Length: 98
Image (tube, rainbow, N blue to C red; front, side, top):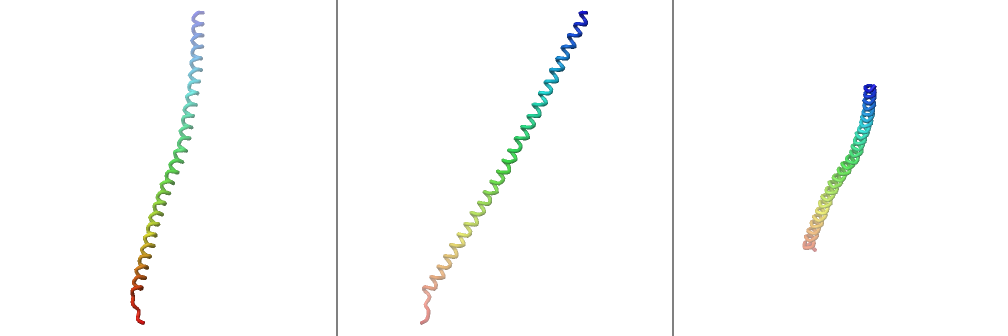
C-alpha cells in the first residue's frame, strides 16, 4: 500500500507540474504576443515620423529654392532699374538739335 500511495503522490505531483508548466507556457505565449503587438505599434509611429521628416526636408528644400528664385528676381529688377537709369542719364545729357 505504501508503494501505491507513493505512486499516487508522484502522479499528483506530476499533474501539478504539468498544469504549472502549461500555465507558464500560456503566460509566455501571451507575453510574446504582447511584445509583438507593441513592436508593431511602435513601427507605425516610426513610419509616420519618417514621413513627416521627409516632408520637412522637402519643404526646406522648396523654401531654399524660393529664396534663390527671389534673389534672382531682385537682382534682375535692380539690374533692369540700373540699366534704365543709365539710359535715362544718357538721354539727359544728349544734345538734341534745335
